[in-house]
Length: 326
Image (cartoon, rainbow, N blue to C red):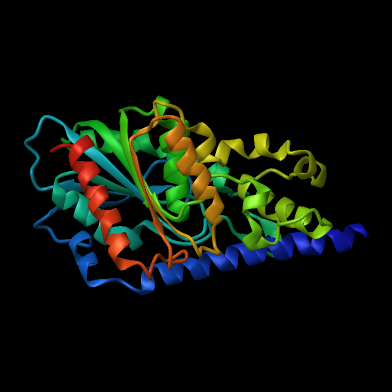
């Protein structure tokens, strides 16, 4: 196979991956059960103060929104960060206003953080990847806390959460970076975020088997997410797993990992469902306090298991009350 012939399937794989993520995000928010209104609050000045587009870096997308509760009399506050979905290529913190308003109404300082989205223009990448995005989130957290404290809301603990791509980034921070956080990370939650990158799990993108096409699919998709070019040989001998570790949240779980509540759909074709089973096993093996919700009739949108989805959100609130008491 010539070099030109080998490149085509790689980029096709990347395009399919990104397109599937966008479709998954659309399905995720298209259907909302009636009970969801309990966790989706319309923002108003009665809840508190909203500060938008505060910078944490020099990039155009390196901004965050800060939601400050009405009650500013407490000696310390818990910070609840929620990271937006969008397949690492689209989305915005403004899409999570109702979730962030709910968290703020409960009494937390809440924050939505944007990160530089991965984009292709005229065949050239802007250099953004899951790895660079995870480092942006790491850099943003201290600035969020400084801004809250400057506004008169001292922070003594935090939770970090998100959906899909945002969930992946939240888990990376909670498991990989929490030891360097300015305040203790006491809880993390989210849904349908990829937690690791074992080739055999990602059959939804043609990586099953030992064919040349499956190796090229892995090279294309994993390289795009990692921001570093892998080789077919690294896929074949398994050494790619070490290269992927910086964005594989599951690989960073230890007995000190924060309590966790997660949800996944067994029919997910956007992120690899088998990866969620590895996440569950790692949480169990390390004795982490966690709840894992598996939705047997749903894909990436979790739209076909309303009763279980409600249990998941009730567990989120239970863990918030337990580990982030007001």
